[in-house]
Image (cartoon, rainbow, N blue to C red; front, side):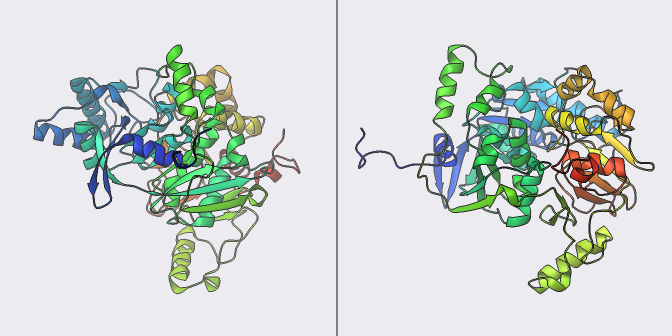
Length: 483
């Protein structure tokens, strides 16, 4: 038995990973941090490579850098040159830079291309206990594996390319426990929308979120990725789940995962990374799973959410003038009346895609409830797998036929209408039921476009009814979606 007086104090996973990757203390609260894995794409890397060239620098560790193309890729045709000359220039620049520096590129011809936050896990590049950086705010997705993963800006992309390190301030850690059992018809997307609604879109500023408790323990890896993906939408710089047997089972056998004896050693090391019993937290939030219902957004940030059964807020009930102003602005943009129900609002577009919810398990569940139904007249519905692997797997299983027969457009892999840096955009003030992660004004391509965030199954319910609907009622089971 160890001597309690000399034993190491308990630590969170965040603290363990941070300490293991600290290169040096720079003073003033700043740390030079080794970045274990750097993921890049076509939008935020060209300028960074240009700055390297101007400074006469190379890429410090190209073997730790992986690239894919996602934001600008058209999902209806991959014929090159792309119709958008800027998009075409971006993909060509990415190819030139990765070839020049010996960086692995998952290009559109490889069968492994997709949204960067899907490619990393699919390939086994995303692993527990490492630090990951990418020039995209939803890099927090990779925390599902027990990695500490940050979205970074272009100048930081330059720094990581040149040094494999970056300068950061250490975060506080908030443990968010969701205990109990989710009710039927409630999904991972509802959980994270409920958390953001509860804590606020800025509630996580300065924090890393550790997700714990019965609900996250029971989730599969793709559900954990959905939750961690939207940590940034709650203001947290990153979010993670402690690695466990579910994590190891997902990673085993993937192309970049360790093999043989190295795999056994890695699992032993990863298992020890989980937060210790008694580890200190800066804050703890406990949520009862039974309190979570299918949740949608009604406003213009992901924190403006509501249970599908509840009305939207009334500014007259706001706690202060600032909140009242925020509610009025959101209601005006969304063309909603104070205190009105969100359920029953007619939609124009149903978008199923994005790095939040376009994985195989999302498609399997959505197809299960969609099969035999058709998209409502007047609704434009598109289904966009997050990666070429997901697309191929869906087509092998006949999932694509279920969507096509229902009236969905079946597209290629990419970010698509999540952020409209490609031909997929809303027009005018169209209302979109969306499985994506952001509902800011203009996010989906039109300044007056309106986005309602929800789970994939709720998108299916909206698509077949033509309005914002409760999937539990649409799919005909009193206890939720059909089993």
